[in-house]
Amino acid sequence: MKKKLIWLTLSCLMVVALVLASCGPAEEEAVEEEEEVAEETLTLLLTKLDGTVVEVEVEKPEYGGVVTLVHTRGGAAQDPSDFDQGYKTAWRCWSLDATNENFMGGDFMRGPCGTKEFPFYSDFPAFPVSARVGLCVEKFDMEDPYRWVLHVRKGVYFHDKLLPCGVPVNGREMTAEDVAVSLRRMYELPSSWMGNLPKETLPRYIIPDKYTLILEFDIFQYSYINHIFDTVFVVPKELVRDENDQETEFLRDWENSCGTGPFLLVDYVPSTYMKYERNPNYWQHDPYFPENQLPYLDGIKALFIGEETSRIAALRTGQLDLQFDITWQQFDSIRASNPELGWRAVPPSNGGTVGVQMIDGGPVTVPGRPLGDKSVRQALSMAIDRDLMYEELYQGKATKWLYFWHVDTPQLHIPYDELSPDLKKIYTYDVEGAKALLAEAGYPDGFKTSILCTSQYEDEVVFVQSCFADIGVDCTIDMREAAVVTSLTHNKAYKDMKWGGGGGGRHFYDVPHYLATDHYSNSQRISDPWWDEMKVKALRQTDDTKMYEVLAEMGLYAMEQCYTIGGMPRPNTYCFWQPWLKNLCGGYWWGVYDYYEPYRHAWIDQDMK
Image 1 (tube, helix red, strand yellow):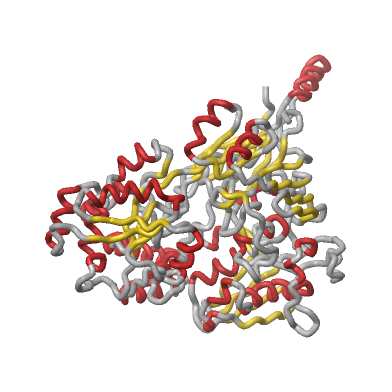
Image 2: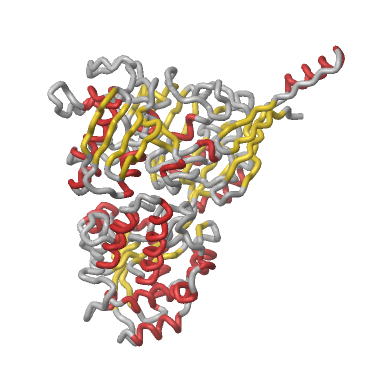
């Protein structure tokens, strides 16, 4: 029998009730015997995004153990490209999430990683800033849209370690200067992705005291909030700027890794493994067990195992504690051979899309260019048998409908069944209707076109090619190496269409840029004055509700224009984990780059392992 501690979490407050009863010596012995085998749990009442209250149960954690995993990105085991996000975007510097911290993060109190009742990616980043919790920045006040006051958390210390570069950080306390320097260099370094942002977005920095940083802007844009609070890792100022305020590049050497995060990077053998150890001076405590300092784990060992079959073999034999990015083709086999493993489906970042190269196109017909005609693009969408794609190509192991806004943004996402009749028609299989649209547009016999892709998406593109053929469209597959496709995409130089395009995504504040005139992420060369105007209107909003209203209208417009022929199923990937790994349950990516944040709450049941 399990003895339970009942904890209720309402309005972010917890009321603890512990009842112990004894009725004489004989009964006391029975209680003591029961406690020896009892497993304490918490029963939590938590509120989901839709407002419903659910009861979940969490076991009492224990300290110790090292989690062994393979860090993968899109299914590939990759070494970090750098250890300083000033020189590579942070998703290529993924070790930073174990060793350093963002300004703010996901709210663990809205549902621990171990609860399947809550969204796979927690409530973040779809949740507004008001629902986030402070990490290096405890909170911030927006006195007006152009002046933000950041309150830097007190009592947060950098790792106390000897650094080969000789800079004596010595575990000192983090201050507002560190936060300011960490942000400023991301805006100003040409090698930083934020260095490509318009210069009018650069803030001015005022540091009135040790724990306060004031940012002043000339213009306001909502995406600044997410870029600043969710993508910038805080680093010690003296490790990145010398006494002459010049860049040092010390952090590009992994041995100089230093942050405020829950783990220290202590060993790295390229293409073999990375090893992290617990930070004994980490500031954060478990919100459900406030007396417990995080993290629970002694460390993490990230292996680099390139072959998927080798990774799966290591998982099956217990050499790996968990593995992400298991393909849908492997799912049934692993479930059959290892039924004891926990598992979770991971929805894709985007639905399947074909991006259309618009050249000078906008919401008008371009003479002599079929793809410039909205009716032609809608016809191509109607030609795709999405049900067959879901059932036959992916055998049902896919997310069937995901377009334009991601399901993780419930304020914006519209399920297929809730589309208006006119929109639903565009995304419903109808060969005869598609032929009629082509004829009305002046192409009764179809036309010739092409799709650029890599071999990774050959099955999907062959399927789409066959659907287009059914309405008389002769589509050539232009299959290239991944590096070539990346180059053509970044240079906006592909001819007709490519697999993948501006079809939305999880980070709603960045999606409007994908279709904006001359934006670097608009590889389709779309030029639509209406969209550009609405983008500014949406991202200049300071009220979340008003912003969502504008973005929702933009999403409906994009679906009608079919700049990207989307809404196609995309296969899920899967996370599997060993039964002894607790309080993780597939939790991953609480923010833009937060791969390792959930591990600070995870623990290993030593008796089971």
